[in-house]
Length: 358
Length: 278
Image (cartoon, rainbow over all chains, first blue to last red; front, side, top):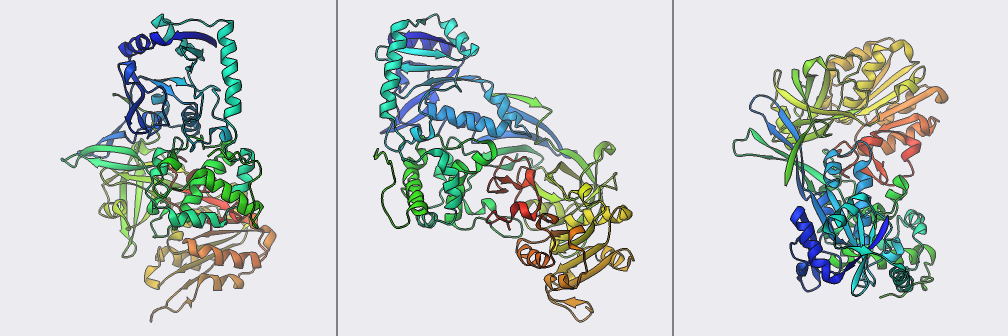
């Protein structure tokens, strides 16, 4: 672990050096307030200041469509398991999305391990970029404590104005910058400036909901039958946007795609959504989460309660994508506030300590 | 994009051959299956496998036979979807893919020496049969054995020939009931719950094992609790859509539980406070 300096004027050279060796993926502006991770060759294509991309970097770790098996049934049920992967460096990943990747790591390294995921993730290097200020008012990263760099990356860059300070976290990160020869040593004043920036951040980033996240699993248990689930269930369109854009939603379906000869083909894994009605349906026709309110409650619990029970880890990264993308304007922060209100103070009144960030 | 082949994927299937097949009812067909190279499935009663036919997909199927028969196993398949309909077209000599066995089955070591009250409704007889036949094959290891069976009509009765054999054994108390009778039916008519009060049992040494459609559990468990059977000695097998069997895909999730890995068999006390589990 080491700190180094990259002058902004050298960023383009650094990106060129990286992309001469491997695929470089970074946030690129796609339209008004919309960004996506895409391959870049030139630093001018990279949006250094961006609000969370439409899809999180999850798409590289767990592709929307992935071949698990290639089969040939010409003479029996013959098959070969395969893994699709690509060596790449993800450049400019926010700390919230790094937290999301760490959640996926937990799920897919749990036994029985998912070899496809594990092989793929080992080929991906991560260069993060720190958020000095909020992206927008949908974020709740301070509540989830994902706003400060705390590992999960090979290198973390912090924008210091005319230079970046680079936190080299791994040997793989060191190797990346070593090859480029563009980084200088961080001196005392650089460390001081970084500490000043972090102090300022601690003033800017304040729990956006005003409820200690450690209270949430208990709140969700008590609020299982709360009215708020019906309220947001009535608004929900069951479109599945929230699960698609969530950095920690990993539910999937497995499907066969036969070739035209109907003998050969592949078995693929595709993203699925617990927000669609057939998701929890069984062969007998019974659906265990029939109502949209059941499914919304399930998704919220899968961020703030169930994974805490299972692995002592919250599966909300505070990125704000679900609220940003929801066509019915279901807002995560507001939902938690209303749930808190309903459970603790049914008569009405203010949520204590609400930061009033919006 | 690079692609490599691997030999340790959890999605890899084992090839298996159908040795025998037999239509049980209009919708259910029983397959006797053996893995290639004489390999044993080595399952516990109550576990399930993922059956696979490339092109038609996969489906979780409970193992209907006892592991005491090592050279083959049986799958009772109801034709309801794409995969199961395709599977129904298969017969002896055809191939099927198998993944598993998966999940936690019936805790047979815990059940040794105990009295058993085994209750099956509808297709629930398929998974329970793996335990019933295990108990029959090791009969002296268990105490008193009661079997209660329920189905919609006499025509829906599965494993009729075997059921008749159980009913005639002196070391098993057997009773069954149909929801709607027919002219030839001389047995009980009524819900399976009506049979429970008639069972004599010593609650402390009795384990009740219940397998049936979701709607059945609530009513049967109520009767069992009235019989003073401790809640941790009431075992249920929950049906969910176990798509991957690996505790990942999310389809079978009940709160923080993955039914495919943590279940499908649960003691009632572990799930009774989980809303929507039963």
